[in-house]
Structures are given as structure tokens and as C-alpha cells.
Length: 145
Image (cartoon, rainbow, N blue to C red; front, top):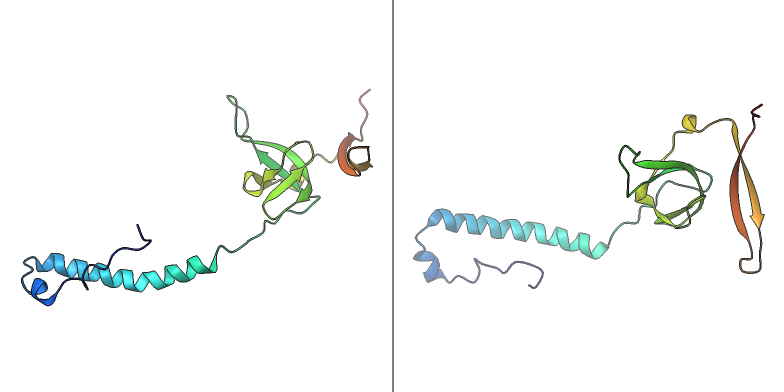
């Protein structure tokens, strides 16, 4: 209720400790109290320090696979590869997906798995509603006759 367990042993008076029948239970409670006294300052220091921000390793231009949350039967878990367009400390914007993707829902794509016959071309489009929008498109370099 108050964030830490109540002190059990210090509230017991000396006469209550003397008439305590089960010494094994008493020693267990005393050991539990010592463990709490040892661990609680460490937990407080970790809690007060706050979470450490570990930014992800993804940068614009990287290739990633995006986790598919609603899979059909025999459908792969990951879709892609997609190219990373923008990043924040917690999310990625990939080309071909309209929404932001959390960095825990992507994994790096193996560069050797990306087809070499596709060339990425970047274009900057501007319109009345958006001043500048970067868009990557993949074009095949081989012709099918």
C-alpha cells in the first residue's frame, strides 16, 4: 500500500519476542527483514535514477523488416524489407507504411537478401498541404522481354 513492506521485527517488543514459540519462523522473518533492508536502498536508487534511454541502432537509409501482427495461415512473421525514412528515439518511419513503427517491432534486414536489381530513387514532393515530403521508390534495372 505504501510502496514497501511494513517492518515486522522492529515492532515486536522484547517480551513478545521472548514468548515467541516458533524459533524457525522467527529466524525466517528476521532474515526476510534483513534482506529487505539490504535490497530496498538499491531499488530506491534505481527507481530515482529513472530509466536509461538506449536509442535504437536504426538510421535513415537502413533496411528493416516490420513485424506482422495479424498473420494469416502460413504467412511470414515479418514483412518487408523496407527502407527507414525518419527516426525518433522510439519509433521509425519506413517507406511503404503509412504509420510510425515502434523500434521493437522491426529487425534489421540482411543486406544480402535485398535484391541487387532494384535501385532506390529518392524524390522530394511538395504540395499545398505538405511543404516537403521525401519518398523512396524502387525501380527494377532489368527488362523482361
